Image 1 (cartoon, rainbow, N blue to C red):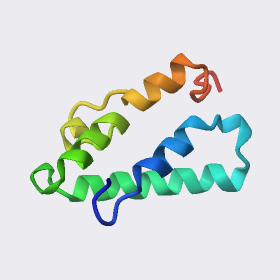
Image 2 (image 1 turned 135 degrees about the vertical axis):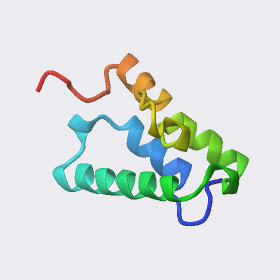
Image 3 (image 1 turned 45 degrees about the horizontal axis):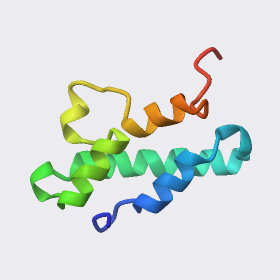
Image 4 (image 1 turned 90 degrees about the vertical axis):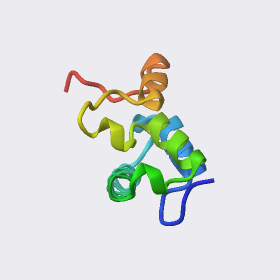
Length: 91
């Protein structure tokens, strides 16, 4: 269960599992905006104030405050790339 004011884990997973090629412009834009807002909410909330499930969820999606100084590919992005569903970096 996600913390109050944060995007639910099921919404994040549903968005991540659908390839961008199957999304319309509005859906892609909505996903982008929701993701950025959730990332901002993650950065504004200290790790000490997050529930254990939120900390785990943030680490899976790359929204952990610990990643601010060392940004890395999230586990979700790694899984999407492994299945060929990640963004095409060649564009």
